[in-house]
Image 1 (cartoon, rainbow over the protein chains, first blue to last red):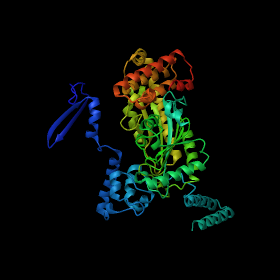
Image 2: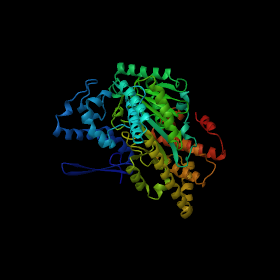
Image 3: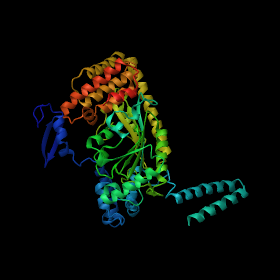
Image 4: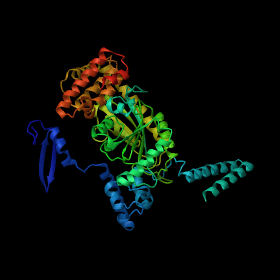
Length: 168
Length: 366
């Protein structure tokens, strides 16, 4: 079978399309298929679109429970939630805070999780680092109390208080 | 020094490395964004300029100053950007970028690269030969720490590093290995392997990402999840799974050798015959035969060909590298003819002079 387009090379790509119930078959060689590729595939399978549908789906759920987030606008960059569902991209770091609730289910669907546990930057992440340290100390405090090392426990308690002051 | 990366085929990952009979290269990529600047797709000339300045100043103040060179994409031709893409130094998307505030910081051998204003403001990448996930991770983190001392990155206590696309948020880290799995494919076990990989939060793609699945039996395995796992866990998981795949591929290669020795030799030698005699060849066909020859070299069926030469050929036969070498634009037919010449030359000259150093190989390339 030869290519429908150039009628020279053997057809290696076969498309079947349905228009209002009518079946239409197209047979192309790889060169013509690559040229036509834009027509058939354009925008249908791109990642942003997939992601957009992820986010759009989220919106569908939210619509039933809360006011439509579609008109929500990020006060920092001006991107709307509607834009995000179309592009699959957020506009700026602030978007994560502005659309926090709407994003939560999407993040869970993508990652199975919505809480970061990895690296924390030392700049801008100072508070997080202190909080983590406090958590560690609290665990140590518990251990010390259980083992009845009260002197050590008192020391740990003082360091925790010191760190908590820095957080205020 | 960038002229080397643009004018020759050589990149560091082509060299031999740990387990490099199966693992071509390892890569760690970290996505980072500046705190107050809109993400790259919203930048205009003015905000883009400011963003570019912040990033390049941070680089100049850091200890990376002399190690990396800055390329701005409005100074590069589309062909040069494609050259960088074919070497895996920038993404296909970034190769289409031509704004003055988009570019690349890269070292001499293409081991460390920082894409500027691709999907995120910064994408720090470390790319090494063979299975070296931990080393890649260590080096990428070092660059991250170095830049962080001069830049405020967008970070949220709950969501981690904030990225333009929510699929990267959290660690912002994508770790990947490029694998050559001819025996797994030949014995029909690929689907089982892909299924197993998918269940462990990893994903499989082709040599040039989406749409290049299975080309030359090359596969890229990377982590899917970036939120809720530590960087160390991601690296350890990917390394462990990779080791299992290596084990599987080696066992199957051994089986093929024991049970179908002649058939295997026949396949390898036919592929070599076509590559050294074809007058014209498409890149897909060439990749397929190069895959067979690579298997033959690693299994001792063919000798006198350096594994390095085969890695180099995978890149040298891509359209931009062919056109750069010829010094002119070419239509697909002339590319097919030129490709056949390049392959023949590389394979036969190497056979005549086994043990010639990789450095000599790159200077042949003009």
